[in-house]
Amino acid sequence: MQNNIHDVTSIPEIAKYILLTEIQVLPQDLALAVECWRKSKVFGKTNSVLYSYENNLLEIMAIEDLSDLQQIFLQQEGVFQNEMKKIMLSDWKKQLLSLKEIVKPHSTNIPMSKYLQLRHIEVPAMVYPEYLEWRRNTIFKHILNHDEVESFTAYHSEFSTEPGVMFFSGFNSDVDEYSAIFKKQEYLNIIQEAGNKYIAGGKDCLYTKIYTKVDIS
View (cartoon, rainbow, N blue to C red):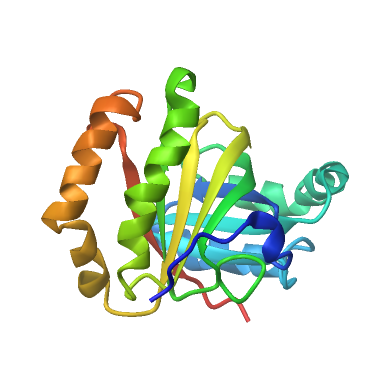
C-alpha cells in the first residue's frame, strides 16, 4: 500500500498534458474504426493508446509541448477523418487536460492498463481550493488503501466542452473486484459529501465509465 501523494514534478515521465479524442461509431463498424486508427499517421507511437467502451473509441495522447497541438490537428485531418466520418455516430470530442496530482503512478507516460476507468466531475469554482484539500483526505486516502487500483492520476481540463476534474483509474484485475471498492459504505459516504459540496449538479453528475484497452499492434 502506498502512503503518500506524489508531487507532479517528482515523476517527470508521466505526461503533463494529454489530449483525449473520443468518437462513437456504428457497432458493426467498430473493428473498421480501429483499423483506420491503426493506419493513421498520428497513431502507433508510444505516446498514445486506444481504449473502447461499447461502440465508443477513446484515444489518449501524451502532449510534450502545447505548441505540438497544431501539427497534431493537421495530421488528423484529411484521409483519416474522411474515412472515419462514414461510420461515425458522433462528432469528434476532444479535450486537453493537464496533470495536477499523482496518487498512484503508472509506469508509462500515459495509462496503459488493461482496464481504465474515467471518473469526471465539474467542480464549482467558488469551492475549488477547498475541494483540492478535501479530496486528499477522502478520495485519495480511499484509493491508497486499496491495491485493486493500480494507477490513479488527477487531470484537470484546460480546453473542454466538459470542463472539470478527470481521474484516470487503471487496473488489470477482475472488473467486479475492482468496482467493489467504490461500493463500500466508506466511499459512498465520500460521494454523498462530494455531491453536497463539490460536484456541480450533485452526486448524480459524477461520470464514470470503464474502458478496455484495444490491441492495435
